[in-house]
Image (cartoon, rainbow, N blue to C red; front, side, top):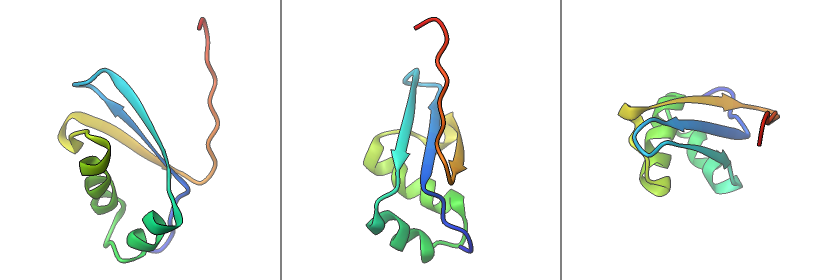
Length: 70
């Protein structure tokens, strides 16, 4: 994989949750051996208990979050 993100954010439709993952150095090292981001997200799904089939995800270099009404 060419560019390795710093964060992966998952919108899990089945468990009704948002999973925010800051990739560790170990995760980034593993990512460098992956063919694409989907392979990395699939591996993370086992660690963080989500199904890649039932979610949307995005990879980010910089994480920003806005909350409204919380």
